Amino acid sequence: LMDVSVNEVIKTCMNLGMFVSINQRLDAEAITIIADEFGYDIQFASAEEEENTGIEEVDAEEDLLPRAPIVTIMGHVDHGKTSLLDYIRRTKVTAGEAGGITQHIGAYQVTTEAGKDITFLDTPGHEAFTAMRARGAKVTDVVIIVVAADDNVMPQTKEALNHAQAAGSPIVIAINKIDKPTANPDKIREELAQLNVLVEEWGGKYQSQEISAKTGQGIDELLDKVLLEAELLELKANPNRRAVGTVIEAALDKGRGYVATVLVQTGTLKIGDILVAGSHHGRVKAMTDELGKRHKIAGPSMPIQVLGIDGAPQAGDKFVVMETEREAREIAVNRQQLQREQSMRTKKHITLDEIGRRLAIGTFKELNVIVRGDVDGSVEALSDSLLKLSTEEVQVNILSKGVGQISETDVLLASASDAIIIGFQVRPSVNARKLAEQEEIDIRLYSIIYNAINELKDAMEGMLAPTV
Ligand code: GDP
Image (cartoon, rainbow, N blue to C red; front, side, top):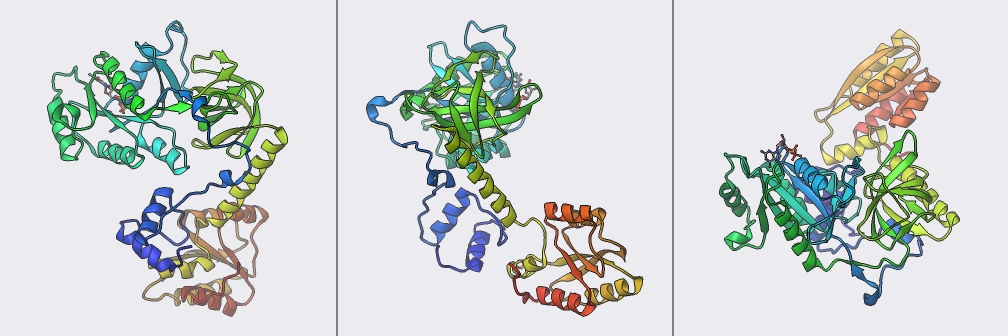
């Protein structure tokens, strides 16, 4: 759309430190940055929005009610993310339910001393957070970044800060392990300041709290600070409409079939609702929380495990309640189709058609080939000629050569070492053909040696006429 050449885009990416290839998909963030370099503003339209799910995006102000904030905990490994999540779950999950066995369903809701609810996403770390964002899901309202007071601000602390800032999420710093004799919270504040993250006590804008996920010290105060950030956001949703939300995780449960934990973001989800989630759909048969307690309805910010979807949608997929089963199925089927087409477009492995493009990018140095033929003489002759095609830029490697049918093992080797397979007067076995399709391995069959050599030569000179 920008009307600039692919090479310019790739060059820009490189200047920005992104090493990309021509057929690579970029995430939303990268696309925004690159377009900006060319002076363009990006507006994202999701395939889902183009479908008619019949859900109006806007609610009237008077229909909106406050909703609980949704919180993600991030930080460096071993700094206490899991311990903090566990402590909060153990001590705060809905009073009166104590003694119940909690299951990990991907998210849970707690009620603080002051009677306010907070929803925690239970998969700590910025990978999950960013994977969701890459899928276009903005779920988290506030991010807690945990730093161990007996350690330092570490690489993953910095990454977490970057990811939260990139998402525009308010951050509360939890300086953890304060119970340890070696804890030095001032050092942490100092190191954060060096990253331009100045905590409030030092006159900055970042709220922070010294805590111990072991003894529980400071955790109530931490939650209060999270609620304060949330208040500033004035989080609201309309509970009186068809539910819309995001899939947190999904799995196939041996006894119960597909289960998906969803987070309702607006509206109220009810038993019997028909929903489409990613490329799956179904009717809500049952809903349970992380204590295994059944619910008939789930309102905004409530995480709930849903039974009745016909497959496992992906984390970050949006779900929408539909009016009829037929509409839901139609949308799901369309999306499946779209996914199939997309997966066909993204070639994982090298093909002859691909060589020219990789050459243009300049990252292509070796062409791996597996040769199979009907007689030893032709295999040798073909292999020798192929080796001679090596140029200064591209080295041809014959990974394997031999007489016989193209087998599954050949395809696996090609897949593992990104090779193409050349067959001379032989064909692949049925299973090898199937596997090659699955693994997207390029198998080229020839009955004239000269043709084989010429086609490869053309490909390596970037001259091969595209076949698709
Ligand atoms: P994660 O990798 O960030 O999830 O970190 P974990 O929650 O697994 O914690 C790593 C280690 O630090 C574990 O051995 C915890 O028991 C310990 N730990 C976590 N929080 C505290 C704390 O507040 N005080 C002390 N003394 N140890 C802690």
